[in-house]
Amino acid sequence: MTSEGIGAEVESVCPHFEYKPLPDSSTYIRLLEILDGDFDQHVRCELTTWALSEAPSYAAISYTWGDPGDVAHVTVNGKSLEVRQNCEYVLQQAFSSGQNKYFWCDAISINQGDVAEKSDQVAIFATLYHKADQLLVCVG
Image (spheres, rainbow, N blue to C red):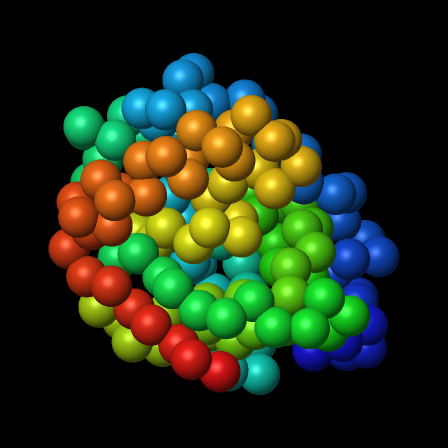
């Protein structure tokens, strides 16, 4: 969905999502719980912080980010977050699978505006993917 439809309506009435810093970005991660998000539905989720060593079962999501001009809005912790359209689509796929409660998705689980956090999180990708119970891959 671009700037039209449900995502635009939510974006116009919801304040924008702001990340809280991780306690330690080399040992903590954020996981999504997708509350709503069937196809043709607005994606609504909760984002929680976990020590990687104590994280519950989760699926890691890998996908192509797509065109930066194709954006959608998802609701995270009651606030609007702009993501690429491919991210919205893969979250809808994850929700419709019904197989996992928690998901790790780099575009949302990492504060993309924090260079230090991104660097620390990229450094633990191998551990993060290894600890995942499942890997969901969407190639487009």
